[in-house]
Image (tube, rainbow, N blue to C red; front, side, top):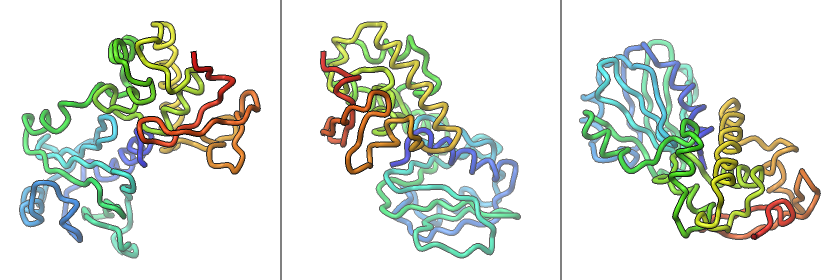
Amino acid sequence: MPELPDVEGFRRVAEHAAGQQLTDIEVHDSQVLRGIRPQQFRKSLRGAEFGEPWRRGKWLLLPTAAEFPQVALHFGMTGSLLWCARDAEPHKHDRVVFGFADGQLRYRDMRKLTGLHLVRGRAELDELLGELGPDALDASAADYRARLAGSRRSVKSALMDQEVLAGLGNLTVDETLWRARIHPARTTAELSEHEMSRIARRAHTVLRESAKVARVPDRPSWLTGHRDEPDPHCPRCGSALSRGKIAGRTTYHCPRCQPDR
């Protein structure tokens, strides 16, 4: 599932279109358009010049040069954004294609769980993003402490809640908690301020390093580099990794490095 690092990669892809005029829009599957018909979508954007794309958590925003309207993209479990030559072979999962003079932005999604919104003004933007917490990469350690304090939920559940912090997902949270030596099932109420600050520092490291390659990497020194092995072991201490379910998601942790206390 695309997480903040993946969407940051899609933001860099979308930069190809910044400063370019939209020449055509192909809607191959209207099911990915949320709250608007294909004809209205095309009419609202026809001839617009795209501005600099920006991201909030797992959302990507493509503003026009006049700021609004903006196209808001969410990638669900299987979505992606690609820059392709105009004569590149079409893909069966290319749902919406934005055409420019020297290329195309293609929204590709197999499962169509989320999709594209047309945001016409500030009020609509605030309504769409208003319940999101601060962006997990931009948030300070003080933000992390304030957002996590007082809950009775597991720390993994809280970190994955987009209303707490926007952008963290299953892989980034498992990696962050492993680096912070925090058991994912511990409740946030029992975490000290020092531990919450440590989580923030480790989250920033994980997100920065992952954003550079536009995905959560499977490096040998990372927990994520071992979770798919038949017999996964901790890259730090060599202990067998524990596998379970927290907040409905498959969770890996090291029982030695991340004691339940």
